[in-house]
Image (cartoon, rainbow, N blue to C red; front, side):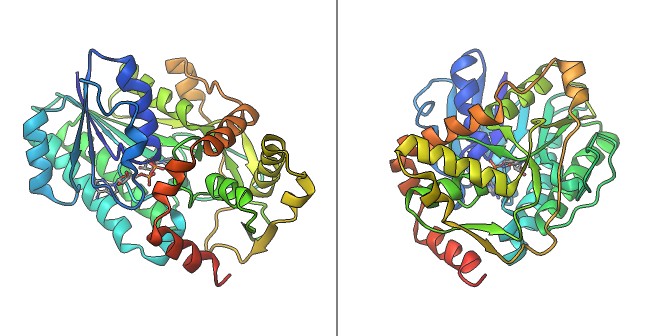
Length: 347
Ligand SMILES: NC(=O)c1ccc[n+]([C@@H]2O[C@H](COP(=O)([O-])OP(=O)(O)OC[C@H]3O[C@@H](n4cnc5c(N)ncnc54)[C@H](O)[C@@H]3O)[C@@H](O)[C@H]2O)c1
């Protein structure tokens, strides 16, 4: 198969390619990525020289450039990861989110519709559980849960999900959608909670926790997410949605405390010293209280299950950041430092 992956230089896309390109030499993988601030080409070092991997720098919002990539590679499957993905950035500047997540997804759907005859091809859309809004203390999101997004990020992802389903119903485009909970693991840009805390711990910087740290997220190790997407591509049904979760709900403050414990153990630092770095900062506006996923559909239909526990996945993640300082230095540019200062400096 010829498989085009968008956003493959970002966190989840790069993990997906690093996992699947070496394993599936019978398939050709093309990574289409605009290389925004969130991308790091070094993340693809393990596959960059393999014969079944190619890279195309292109912006989803440039339709003629996109068509040229489609004409060159004639993909049979599209796996759509590319997005603006950081909630805080969507609050500071929502325009890029509407542009890439809505217009970019629209362009990609149109490029597929142009290339494929009706019923041909497969478009897998990677989305988030944030489209469902916030849960109270109980309950879980399933595939029938009503959309109720809170942030510009989740609203733009919700819009893209609707476009994908409409292209299926209206034009017969073969699509599958997955809505996944929070991912963590190697190669995640250090503006997100877990890598931000690990790097601040290593540098003895304050650990900024929003509000009281009581927001709950359902954490999934990134490779488990990638395996789930691959299972859906292989054996899912067209027009169907699959929720993917880790069955691993954690309050933010507990995640931060576990990271203090792990970094203390891994570096031989007194844990109390690291716990003392925790500071509470004013909450994110519209901050959803709790997300939890009911992934019984994918578990029952595709026999998928997360392999990694939160404890083992978190330790692997800490070890990866400890061992990969060069990768970290290469993503922490001047722009990154300005953003951290702008977002946390005034709270
Ligand atoms: N990270 C999570 O916890 C999580 C959870 C559920 C779903 N998702 C979804 O998974 C996908 C990947 O998330 P991620 O965390 O890897 O994101 P990321 O921000 O790490 O990577 C996004 C990638 O998309 C590329 N990109 C952005 N705009 C582009 C454009 N206009 N044209 C081409 N490429 C562009 C970037 O260069 C980057 O490589 C997103 O669609 C996100 O909504 C993420």
